Image 1 (spheres, rainbow, N blue to C red):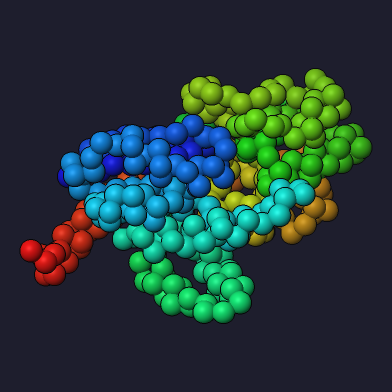
Image 2 (cartoon, one colour):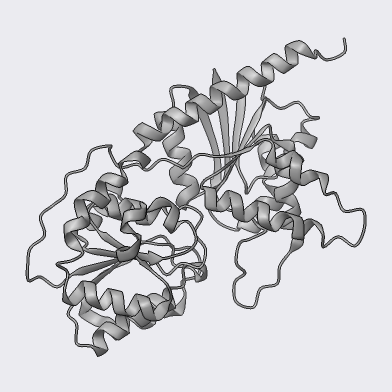
Length: 374
């Protein structure tokens, strides 16, 4: 079987997922992409580009795409003649937080809905994301003043499921020994964007400085056209404490930074899976993440009391305790790392290949039972 993967936003978690699926799947998958910028215009117009870019869909057993692709538009342009399709939802526009000063464009939410209705299968990247989407969907539909299509909720839900994306680290990782007495290295490896709440992270670092704690920081993570000013302000404020400032494009070098790290922190306001935290934990960092979003789901229950925080003040106090007195926390490194092993692509690809196999078998069976007229 041969599949086509269309990714209109080839960057960040979208790129990680597309690269992993095409690399590890036992099936042949052709990947066609657009650069990771102007996401709103990708949702509005990428279907027009791919309609002309791809000469024929007839050679493919199935189609895979992400939620930033208007599958309903592409299907309409092709006269409905598309192979069975799967949409993988990294995020959705019903629940994604708005940037400061931005007003919600409801059409993007309706694009999510029509894309989901046009697909044969919808796959969410976590149970948290799944629940969030379907808890917001009725209210979103009910904003319509009349003739509300409440039927779409059931139609989408009956073909929706959850499979965690894979992570590119190998299934087996060797943890480096920590050298006692060295200032702990705190890792920030998230996108440099508003929804990751970097200002709260830097407030936590300021709290450490006020308390006289010694630490170092590596500011990793991808950023796009605009970088929040809080990062340049932090570069001036924390000076030599910041030993890495900027995105690390080379994966092996990035993993080397994670292996050198001691603590990884998230202050995110939006996170449907948390691949950056999972990568850091697997390479030996101990996490400090909020007790919300996807983090309680990906972190085993026994680690919740130590490594989940309730609010910013709780974050500040727990981070200070980790920096000043690491003994109660760092013995858990091995157990934490082992708990992330299941997310390696070598393990997750089995579920994705089963899904691809089942999709084509089910749809082809339905075609045999209900052949087209003529």
